[in-house]
Image (cartoon, rainbow, N blue to C red; front, side, top):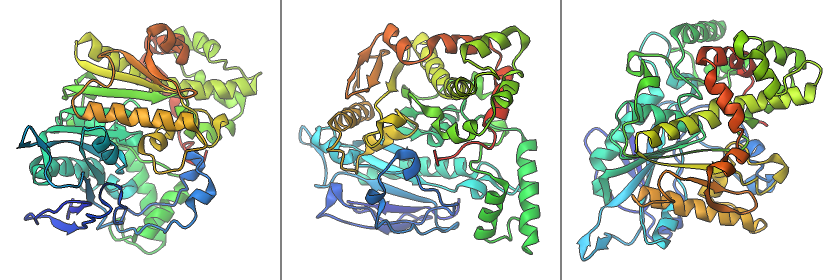
Length: 470
């Protein structure tokens, strides 16, 4: 991983051998203070405001972030101010949440709730810088994260944190990594999987990675670079853009073999999805003809093919219904079904799991539905949502529930399901209501289809069509 930099927002730390520690202390602003900027991994620019429907005026004045392929592996530790925290006169070590990727205002709310906690955010290598060049180690992002997790477990007590009370959390690709770490035995007690798991992006065979590396190498060699290692960051990013590569993936390796048969090695799990996860494929699917979509579903096995088409309204004669059905299939196969199946397995094993559904629509454009990543806007705050009291209420309730979970308390009744939204609603729900919020009948059919057959349908539907500009 190279140098690991640790940024301390509020407290003080001592320099540890083998780490470069850069300290920022803000005792005045404390819990609400703006963190110091740290370099991020080089990446092709994407305006996340498109997907999240953030008004353009809210983004005005934002400075471009510094990028550096060698200084992008960082930790940001955010903790309550006010010195040591005590309970019954003795120093109390605080629970810790490691978030892959960004920090939040949750620390401030945890203090107001009387349940103070520490958040550590992890920045790691991305895209080709995390993928490797096929000649050395692979899955470098996973390695960056594991080093960061182990650093926290070893040193967080120096920040007032409890090394035996760590929650690892992430959303989307972050949740994919969190799931991997729970299967690989990372030293954490709890995990939060928001809108993602290894079922969303399973480790891909070496052939797929080798083909990407070969194609990218040819592109950078046109610009006189001898290899990927010699090419400047700008050339690598330009090559990825030319190839239409929008996202990378975990590569198969021995440590991840048989991951589907493994159990998550944590004591408690919080897991859920939002209503419209597949929005990130919407533009790509809408560019397809009904005939092209129908041909993708023809890859399903003959036993289930017609039932699958019928249930998802796949027909070359009904283009609009066909496109909606394709997006529903992607949503169910890669988000809703895995969340439900993982939670069901935990309940069957009598393990503590808290499952939720997030159905609160975008606070800025309700017609865009409860889409992928909108839950982060409400969970992390940072925007004026006074125009949408229902969104504010759901966000406040989410933070309370997440804070309770990280503190080891019950966010809601064990092994029950909880709903956030729509219309500001937040409550426990029974199985009947859950089935009305998600396509339970569709998911049951997908369970009957062999994974290889399901992926045979999904692969040509989703390949190269993901985008945050939806």
